[in-house]
Length: 164
Image (cartoon, rainbow, N blue to C red; front, side, top):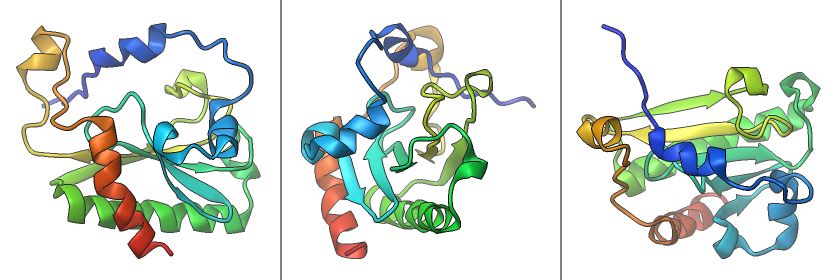
């Protein structure tokens, strides 16, 4: 049986004004407005950000500070830290949100589905049995059981504790 991940609520992002100057993944960490920008953790080479247009509650992004659209141009140190942050994010999400599984991936290039193709980033999407139901398919509405700021407040202390 073919399974599909439906996400019609992401049309808000697709249709949003993207005329903002510069790369959002470069400007967010420079602003130092972590709560407002949903930035959970700053590493030496990468940071962890909540997705503003999530597929599910707890949808996180691991993003290198280096602005590049090519994964192969990233240094070994940056790749190592990205992997450490992906693994740590999964552990924290397991503690805080008890998902049944995860989708983890990178879409490199617009043709591959990258919404922000000019800056490499990994997605970590927690999944629960039955998290895709009739609402997104028939009602074009995704039910997120927790607000973004509430999820941030749940996850931020765990990132501070586990990734000092």
